[in-house]
Length: 323
Image (cartoon, rainbow, N blue to C red; front, side, top):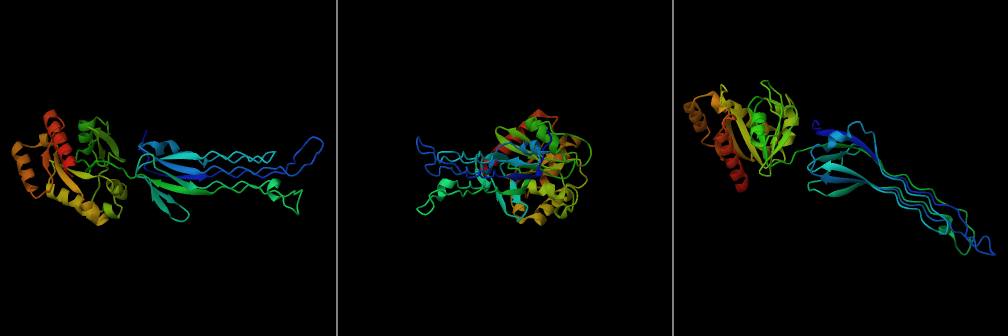
């Protein structure tokens, strides 16, 4: 199932049940007084945070989420049953925007719930209107409509490590080698059009779509790339060993991070020299020396060498434990 990271849904809370006109029937006294019950309240619309990054894909093609209506009032002054709420599962970390007024909120923890639309109140039955001056009321009140709205839901991944770098930096291949995530791999730019996730010793690693110069103003995959690194704990910056200019590649990505959000450029970062099998050992050593100013570890890896993949994985776990 393809990952859907943005979708707009409509939801409607339940309508309240109507109050009713009923009369109490007693033996020998047919109309003993008003006994029409109130209607039940309509069900709410509730968003719940879940650890399922693919949940939004299941909502494509669904036109409306509807809560249950409240029941109408009953005889003997009994109220109708309240409507059942509809629960809409939302990936944790998603940003939810009410389209009408731009109000936004987030669910950051599994199991967190928020009522986004209130069900309509149930109407009063005629028993509610009895008074000393109105012994036999015939008034009743219809139930109120529930709230209705559209919501834009934008997934922002919560991951321990985000693999970043220019297109063709080997991020997808590296994710597959580390986690067997089976991300799509190809020898052309923008193979990764959506984030892929994998787990390495319970740490979540995200292969985030590559970017080009100008991504911070929307070029290439642009904002689709940048918004997904906002929630990652550390950045794993992949630079291909066979690049013609390693420092330029690095600085291009760093500049886009800073242009988009200064906070992104200050995230903890380790540097991974990928495709180390495509150049000599001397060339790998030279590339690593150019990044001696890096604040995190600088690791060379070849996905064809299981030992180097293991060294990278161990270094990543140590790095995550330190930050």
